[in-house]
Length: 101
Image (cartoon, rainbow, N blue to C red):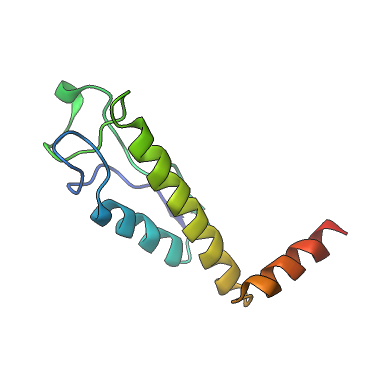
């Protein structure tokens, strides 16, 4: 299964991701989908938004996106390791070491 999210209504009015956005992305990671294509359809200019709460990527919001994406990537990685049965950090580190040999 693949997830291709489109624009949501859970950004701020200036286009930043909110806690609801982050929770939605976390739910994508937990869904069991094998591929998440991108993370969201975003606008790059205010007049290009489909709704007043659509995410917007620009010089004012980029750091918020970097933080949100980094948190999502960490969460998705952890969800993957839990999904395949390595629930604790020591087990995942041991598994990664095994893969490298």
